[in-house]
Image (tube, rainbow, N blue to C red):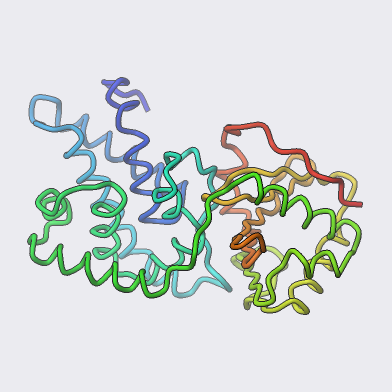
Length: 301
């Protein structure tokens, strides 16, 4: 897309993408929303718009609301567990833990249970610090209703949001220990790094082999993990990156990204593993520029 004002695009692209991604849980759809917002800006023209930021934010939020309403049936019919498209944390968040938490897989799954308007109001207020007057204009609701939407959403999320610990060197070390245990088939080692109430989810969309219901507890999760890693082939490689606010494992087979394993870590134990295997959801990450060099990992034989 040839933009009339590339400076404007660079100034607001990150903000708009960050809003759209959190709204939709899809990086590819978020990009489409951002491109459409700028196209509409161009069609209106600079002279007709008093505040480019306000205009663009309004357009991208309303596009996302329309997208969520039209995608409702598709989400309800999704095969197996639904997880958001994985994305490098640095692409959508600043280093602050509060902002990073809203990218976590667990948090974004919770957002799916809010209505589209509740989600928009909560995110604009909590994450992007818009006042209620601005939010009311964006979502075309009264300020009173926006306050109600916000408090309902916050109450729901506070009651259910899991504990979140941002990525750290200690978490990297723990995942390294996890990979060593898996590579050696060491059940005792896995028992040590996994919490007793570990839950493992898999999102394949019916397009890759995966358990359609969450696996819970040491026995079920360890059995499945050891089975999966026994299928390792010589053309596979493993990279560790910060994805959706958490240390995550990217598994490549030749030049194809086939799995992202996102770890939820609390009190130096892995409490949740979210596996994204749906190739459609891996496409954006596979073609993204890597923000940092991957962390070295032990080989998996």
